[in-house]
Image (cartoon, rainbow, N blue to C red; front, side, top):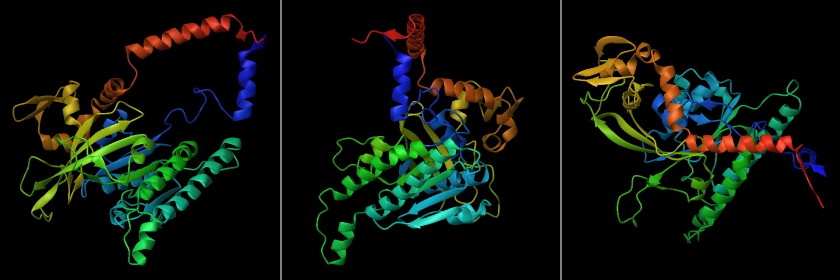
Length: 390
């Protein structure tokens, strides 16, 4: 006769495992904000939670769709609000919004800029960093008082912008031979090396990538093809697709509530961006939000939440505006909704509660399964957790 608990104790000591209830890696411990509550909301179900800690999040879309802007907001939140010691940006394009980040009052000495010139170069630099972060996390777990818990955000901008050393070396030799899939294989290998290192270190990785229309597709698809191979699709825990529509100057249907008469406006004043969760391992995928990014006044943190607030019954659409019963019996305008915190604060906690329940994977079926499992465990414990071993 041998107890399961004794077998498990020996197994845990041998392989270093823990129960899911005790494992710090089983659930997301914290989140960063992407600067817009609607974007956060479609990822986590909560308006304050956008980029999950210890996970790989990929933002992909066409040029100018807001990828770098959302990543920059995550940098700001990490360094100003969440106590991160460092942000490391692996840059293959030179398109990082450093001016915007600095304008938000961020200490720029806490941002490490790492230029990368090829997949091999990028792989070496990223794996070396994440190996160090994993070791630091392990040391902190063993001795929290004597070590610092690593809180580091990494960003790769961009995945589609890096190629193999072979392509570069061939070009230097005045020849452009076909890669025969070398880049895709190397990128896949890099991602396989990063997945668990990201989880074990609890240091998030944001990957920015490009999109393109599939020329072989018979019909247009809502989900666009992603550059750089399919490895990034399989490896990412969250994938958000961004598509844009340029908004002409003078179009007052799209506002942030922060516009100024002194703003300089060209032919276009901003982008209407659709964000769609193509993949999501923390909440249900397939949710979308439309937000407006103004070239002068940036973005409203509330923009994009109005449709869901109407669906959940917190806001009612009426002729010429909206009614918010929890705020006032008077009608409010669209501009007030996207700029007035007081309106949203009257119901936002209940909004989050309803949203997380609707968007989580848990449902009546899983609840019933959990009930059955609980009864099974209780019955097993009543038999003293023993089995016969011949």
